[in-house]
Image: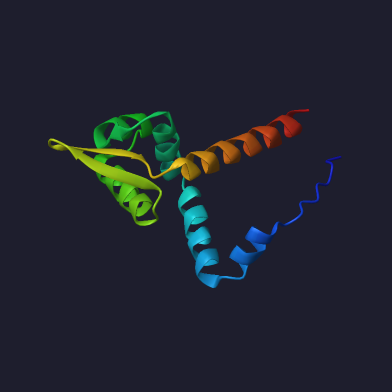
Length: 117
């Protein structure tokens, strides 16, 4: 049986939760993370900056699909784009995004290992 964990809410989190705009923005971030292709894109960008064609090859989807997903990720503030000649290079917007990815993957790995026991 799984052990129950009680997490105490700190004052900062409580203040964030009282602001509807912050809660809405957070839900938009988690919504963006919930798509498999977008998750693959963000995971790839955790390793380093990539062009659209590199992301297309890594994620095994069309360039149109990658561009569509990158637009959504950019609109949600999760990725940053910069031009390098004719190529557009994407990277994570900041370290918070990498932290979200790491924590999500660690939690999933923990759940998988508990199921496998």
